[in-house]
Amino acid sequence: EAKDPNALVHKIRANLTDARRTLRIYGTSVVVARLTRESDHLRLHFLNYGAARGTRVGGFRVRILGRYRKAQLHSVGNPTDQIIEFNPEAQATEFTVPELKAYAVVDLFQ
Image (cartoon, rainbow, N blue to C red; front, side, top):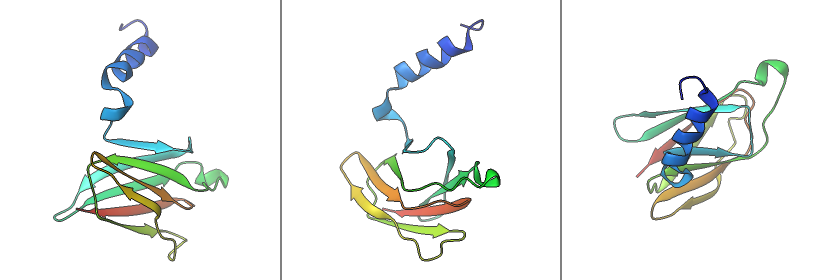
């Protein structure tokens, strides 16, 4: 496995399965996310690493494990943007970020 890193990555993903991933991003290949815990909520940081080349990201879907009742979007360059299609389910919460220029934060409250 050490000789073939791709095989190791495949094995880890197969064992983890999509359903058990804490965070999933759908609809973009240029956004990375970081999850932090604040005193009373979770905070998701989204970074568009294509922004320096002028790549703007249209709507992308996010799935995070856990049930959250509310999400607030704070988007640099798009201060009036709001989360759309917010859907809290029993095991996970899904929502759409409508656009990402460079950086945004989503606060999730239980």
